[in-house]
Image 1 (cartoon, rainbow, N blue to C red):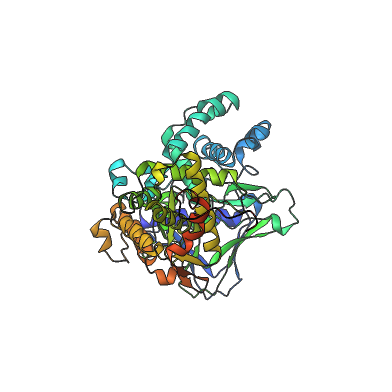
Image 2 (cartoon, rainbow, N blue to C red; image 1 turned 120 degrees about the vertical axis):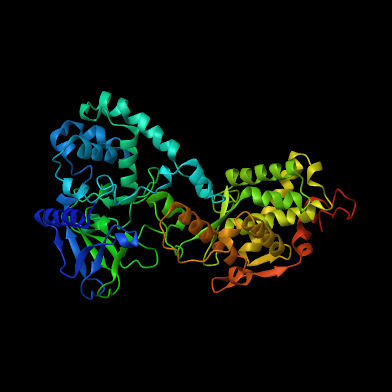
Length: 504
């Protein structure tokens, strides 16, 4: 598309917005940012102060299950559409607007989206990558969470069974899997979760949630109903976790984009796609932040922890499996506030020197069990004996962590586990530098892997992780931590102590 054609589509889009009652501040404009690999974006033409309104969107502009042509033409389908998930209903509505209605009310909006302007907007979500391209993302665990299979399951559910046979929308009888993917990826990248303003248009709290859309299986716990919606102009803003300077907010039955900090003339205006690391940004939205997301983290898979304790700490492989089974059983049978599940598929280590408590907990449990295993062999215990031992260790570790204590063996085990995970990352990633602006898929792979590797490397700085303003851990001798456990569990079976009298 030439610059003149690109600008024409933008101009017609702005005219359509204004004709539909959208109020746009003279201090902002849509700008061609293709030279920065960003398509269109919103830029400040004058200095903007915090809390200034950049634009206001009436309810009529928002495309959702509450406002669409399909239900205007076929109102008898409302109950059936509302019975579907918000993802499913919006997919059907968008497919109808895009492929069944050449004169859709939103046609000028579609002209500035990837679904019409594929020349300037490439779908780089991981859903569209080949297996060869995805191989360059390993060892990132994001390759296991792409969701292609679940997306195709939804397509097979909807077409033709629900859409044509049940709902009778014959106009969508020929929808292909490719067209379905294009609409689904559009919703993933551009939709917002907004509160249903039709419930109480006078109540400002029923306006909108400023968060963009999440996965189709995400749920919201708020009592107010959230609906998935396409919000023209709001989705023109590019997103950046560190440069975020504007947010979508409710205002009665309207939505407003409001500056959340002062913005200088010439600066781009950014929204945010929630607290996502680079890997998740790439999976959902098809781009990465070149110098890393504010919320980056690396992951330590459970098998890395298993390899460490079975290969270096003397716990036999079958004993490790039995320990994991017991830990899951403790979490299932105990009260939630006392017995949490510490067995996860992977454990997050954040760029800002924070690790999730489950990682600390499971390494400490396995460290104590390794110490006990040196004398009281875990693999020789029956199910009851092993359960009793693991349960006592679990309770001890709970108390230790709660009181800000860890044992001396924890840190070397923790270090070696993280170092083992880091060794899985290729050398060209380790030696690369930040700041690459090329949007090619191979470059994005390197940026994602570097984001994860840097996060893991930061979490090796144990002084910052376990001795900071949020908590300081004291390290104690292993023997001191296991003393009570051995007395309770083993002292009467190894002849090392006499049974205490009942009076004593």
